[in-house]
Length: 326
Image 1 (spheres, rainbow, N blue to C red):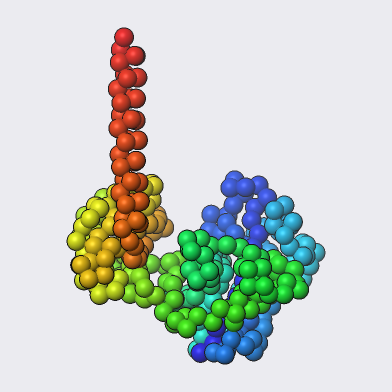
Image 2: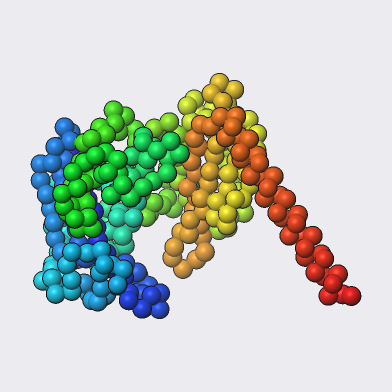
């Protein structure tokens, strides 16, 4: 099997949201990729500029990063031609590797815009940005590609923000870290999600549990699904005792804590994602990871702080009503 390490550059409307095409807010203008074998050696490369169809003028923030301009893009290939060429170059037995999750998302957005055949589902890939963070950052926070190159003391001999160069840098980082458990560190792309309950994705890998749900009409309906809200140990898969019930931390996320009597505390997180289309359905990405007593206490404090804020807000509303009434 080969690793296809790829990077994209994309452009957007110079007029902001008002000038966006509803089906393609970001238009790909460059594809760069390297094919890496199981010994982490680069054995082939692919690179192509894309002739823009929607956003022909470069956004100022994009222009400042790139090493080319509109004149060179005019000589690029149409996206559908370049993308088909790229996918054929990938071969048969491969897995995508990217620095972050955005590249796969925008690749599929552009493919859908041109009504191209879709990528396989469910789609596994390696998010090397997150893998790097999990290995080298104690708090698992992600960093930019340039910083990772510096941290690994790799030669920065080519300009960043050229797709082929960034793909090479990402491949060098992969070769430098060589995680023995790489096969366990895959992620699931969520550009597409399960439509039916029986197609839901549940995986125990890389020391955590990952679940991608089917669609729900509302967040309330999701939280009423006992299968979704049950916390299972990411090591033995057994049901955990509830220590902190699910509570909302932001508009689109909730957390809870359970305890496995064999493996300790488990931190569960949910993110609510819009399903897209003409309705308001949502789906859920759920993750369960091991934590400790300190992590449990931090979540408890966060819950208490949020409760106190709500109480203060209610008190403030009551006081305002009294003032208006008087």
